[in-house]
Length: 277
Image (cartoon, rainbow, N blue to C red):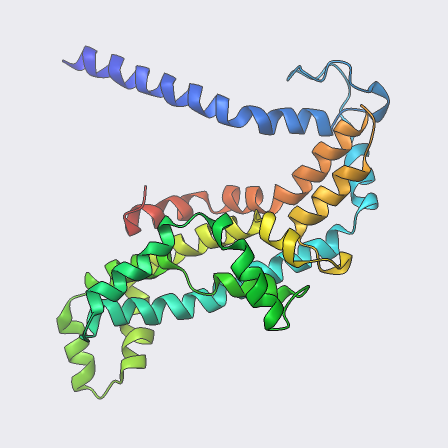
């Protein structure tokens, strides 16, 4: 039995290693391409094994060719602004659907969840017309506004709040707590793993968002990283620009990769504690 168990464990490790290798191949290729000397052109671009002395020249050229600092600031403002508002809205909505009794609560909750079934592209034109009518076109708040409410976040917080024992809420009410005190000091501290998990998903999703900011933003000084990178790559021509494009792409995703590398254990623990896979 032990022998079969060891063989199964080794087979499992081999499968996981193969999946990791396939997943990491694009990143390895980008890193190899970004560190290639510019003068080599497109020769040997298909190889993942470098046959040259790595150089940061492509990163320097990419950084000098685009205003990455401004793009970083715009992206951080967008992701941070969306997340701050979402944490408020999903907490309030999650508490309402989990603990408050009102007519049509179940029906309203199910209607609210239909947002999860809608393809985002379907909402592009209505959202764009609404943003233009509100005078938010070509502004960062215009990019953020459609995401201030999250059906997934509301569902996650509702399920988390429902798992909190009623006795804690009743004890707080006896001590004179109001409903906002319950959310702030009882429910949210116990929902910390779910909040961290949702924050990771929200920041990652909106950091990589491309189509909606492309439609809303026209001014170059308001572009996030994804739109700025697209403009940057359109301006790079020739085979030797592969290295510069790869360097620019790595500069865009570097904060997410560094954050995951530094807080990997906390990320995994938060997803496990919140029940997400």
